[in-house]
Length: 402
Image 1: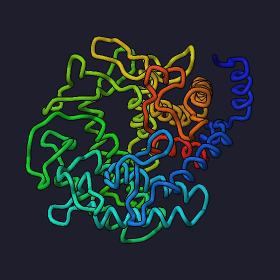
Image 2: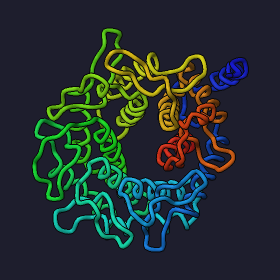
Image 3: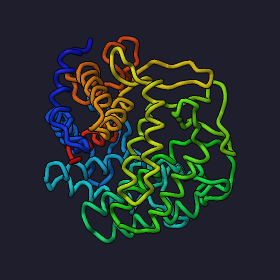
Image 4: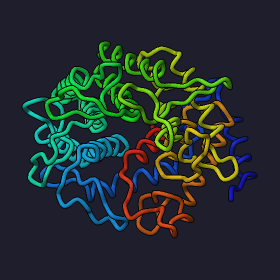
């Protein structure tokens, strides 16, 4: 499938122009491809997602018909707010900033719990809570949106709201054995339940954004505390020098076994670019060394050297699910772009970008397919459009890195 000769020629040109430190992601990225797809994404979401109330519609069928009938969901709402902010940074179009402000204000007015703090996960069409449970994954994206709103707008009310949100998360969702609980009742009462690395990873991402927005050294210390917990408690080192972070854990942070005890390959790539970016925010250089270990495992186990792209997961018995889905491709490309001075990673970026261009872009409806087009006949592509978070994050990484 891949035109390896053409890719090799392109790679030779890129590396010949490479500076000693490899430059930034834009030095090796297919910039026009990223710009074209980003502009199409943000414009489409701007035209469809913002509602007059400020609520963001976050779920659409393949043909861009909304599915939630006015029901608001914290994670999707926050991801669309983030998308609007990237749209403004990428284009300078005031409409994106206006939509982002309305969406952020709506989140603070309706999703925020005025009695116990934190955020509701789901609201009805009138902005009233449907489910009072506090979901840490959703809180991570609320914090991400608030942090980006604070940085992009410079509005102190968003900075204050972001710091207050983190204070609630840090004080009320803390797990007694380290990290953060995955879920809690409305009043944050203690309880047991299984855990995941996923909400910790996205909270770490949100804290990096909060550092960018505030420069607060207490937040730097909190990000290190969370990162150190994951790397010292959850990460598994291998004799090869590689390492991985299992996906699911019991109430005491012991990895689950059997079918639930898998390693999500996309998340290994996601951790690598987050850890690699942490040093410039004041976190220790060892995080980049750990990123190298995770990337070593992820590439050896999860990269398709024949056709390009990332496999889905590895089970505890060693079986590899070789399915491919949209978001691991985006996160792997971000991981490869974080190492523009390494020809082996640039090659894999180019191969994965070609795979996405040929198999994932939906040229009929717009957006991306959830799975490769060749798998759509078996139902793997689903009936929904993916939300824009992973795709916009990839493109903005390629376009904004110097």
